[in-house]
Image 1 (cartoon, rainbow, N blue to C red):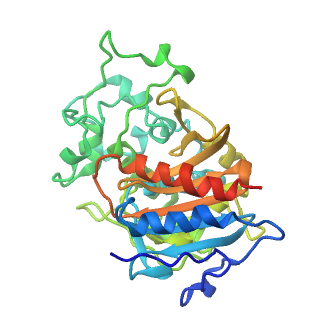
Image 2 (cartoon, rainbow, N blue to C red; image 1 turned 90 degrees about the vertical axis):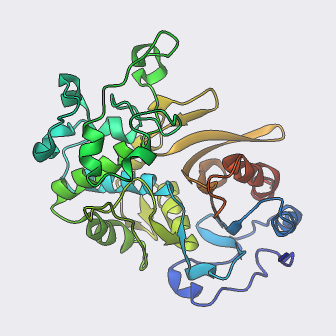
Length: 363
């Protein structure tokens, strides 16, 4: 099994063609890593303790200071990080609002789809469903990917031709006596992980902007960040899927986290409004005692010894992560192909708490 050499971050060779990706590489001023945790991480990945990890990157103070790849794709390879796409969809919603193309998160969903009025389960309460409900995974639709019996489970959607109609036709969600109603929940919302709902954002974006989602993303988000390669997945009707499957390189994924760490700027250029960044990364719904949710961002604190650090994260199947740590002025990207494995997110969480955070919080 491949075991990477225990090189320090500063001694890492620059991967071929990586110098053109827009990142400044190297040590940020006088800040030094504790090298041993990162060396031990490389050894742990090499011996299989963290299965199918493909890359680990760390940005500190705006510089790419640690970069290791564990497959043949390297810095330019496009990584399918599954549901990290959802957070990109939230960025595109923010861009549409910033450009005046979408009135705001309070905009109602159904008026964007006059040709797809719900037929199977019509209900006047669906008329109140808003873009914010989709961004916070708290819509009225009975849709729960964590429940294989849910009518809206994503696996029931994929064999259907029209994913938009599938979603809008879902029944209204019920709250039995043992479930917490939105009115009794923090922030007045009840979380239910719903890929299909996030998929609706593609149609909303296309109809609001007058452009295909992939074209709008390329023009308004990727080009300003110097992201030149992206591969979308599409539904059977040819609409880019905002619920998952977008493939980007590891350095480009890191840029998305850095964009939010910098309040919507990349290399001094305003890309997203600071107000959208703040709104997206504050809590709008409670998931559990340890985790809250923003606008398609996961919000958590990570404990390292007696210290803990605020974070907001893009996350996808396999344990894929782009984790932003404002307290440490750092962004971490971890990519894997450990899809659908037990404890996949716990595995990359442990990489953060046992190796990466001790290194970058060592001052």
